[in-house]
Image 1 (cartoon, rainbow over the protein chains, first blue to last red):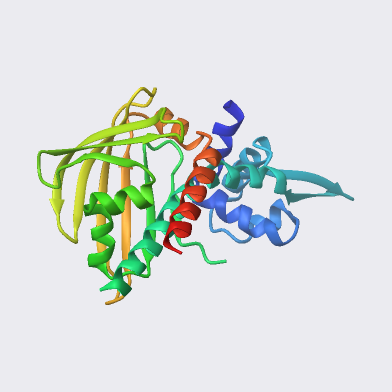
Image 2 (cartoon, rainbow over the protein chains, first blue to last red):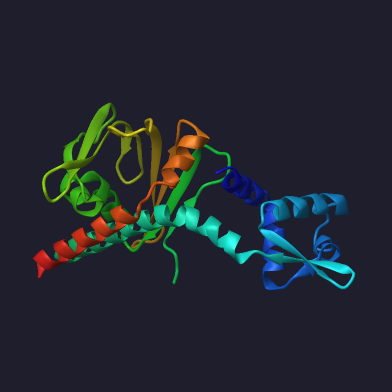
Length: 107
Length: 155
């Protein structure tokens, strides 16, 4: 429960969301990630630390450099959290739409 | 596939927003919220009472096929402006969830399409998160079965 809370805190920040988007396509070093932001480098480092602590990012050492990868499993956990609730409403609204369209054609 | 219904829940906030665009003119979308018989069909619940006016109130009740009551909810209507807005409270009876406040905004997009925005405010962040984590899978199946039943009786 505590962990889940942290994950949501992690993605509540717009810079951290942007970092996750960046790293989705390919693994990047901290320097390469920071180059995409006007924020000071230590601030980006702090964001990377939080994302790594929440297991949304994974570090992998390649030679002398550390690359950040996205942890797809953890990301899916976030999507799954709200998905059943969204599905329930989507289902209800689909039904509403179908019923009212029938209503329209009856007139 | 395009996602028609969106749920926006920011971390550490005691509110959430559900938005949906419909292939329906505004008046038909609103009618689906106004007419108790139609509400019964798409919500899959019985409407015991519905007073569409300021200071009015409503009560919903759902039974399983054996007649056991599985869901009961009620609320007070604070604002009812046709084709525009419904402000109301919503409370699930016999549940650990306190009453919530709902702002429903209806708006036209084109002559044939419309949009609904549901802004829901909870007593606390924890209550909102708890509700989001409820197992809805069963409810979805129940609703799906009911839809099949409705379609079947229309044939």
